[in-house]
Amino acid sequence: MTNKKEKIEQEEELKDVPEEVIENEIDAEKSPADEYLEGWKRCQADFENYKKRQAESQKDLLRYSTQNIVLQILPVIDNFHASTSHIPEEQKDNAWVTGIMYIQKQLEQVLVENGVMEIAVNVGDDFDPMIHEAVDDIKQTESEKKKVYFKNKIKKVVLNGYGIDDKIIRAARVVVE
Image 1 (cartoon, one colour):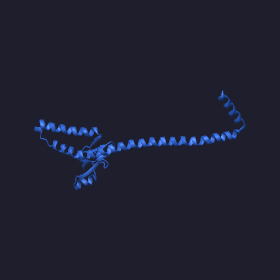
Image 2: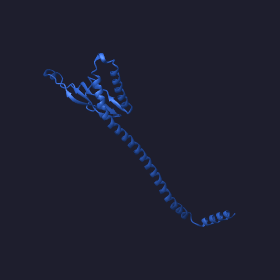
Image 3: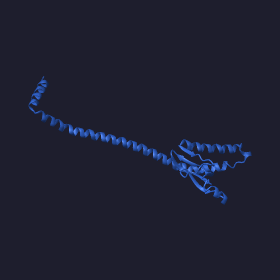
Image 4: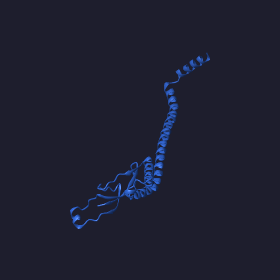
């Protein structure tokens, strides 16, 4: 019962207070609460942005560490390609040669599983300095130079190029005519 009496007394006291004063007091209490709420929202947004930056940073770290290891493995794969391209025809079915070819495929599969893709380059393709590195050019005779100034075509692939996602980690080394 005292609660009812107290409420009635408070309501009667408030009747005497001008409405303008009550609104000012409410606004005064509301202002810090709004500031705290805005600060909390900003802090929450900053934390979400931080989490996104950290996730992106982790991806970059993984990508660059993969790139470093891949650049160390590529010469090994190049040597496999060079050695297996010179196998005599009569020894292609040899068990030892088959085992070496299997090891080469395993290394290539490890690269593929880590997002490394070989850049497709064929003889006759146009030279693209974004994905190719010219290591030599074919000398043309004087009569050929008069007919065609630059062919800008790939004549021979010296080393395959590789990329991770959209990034070229090693340009294909080619001979251009």
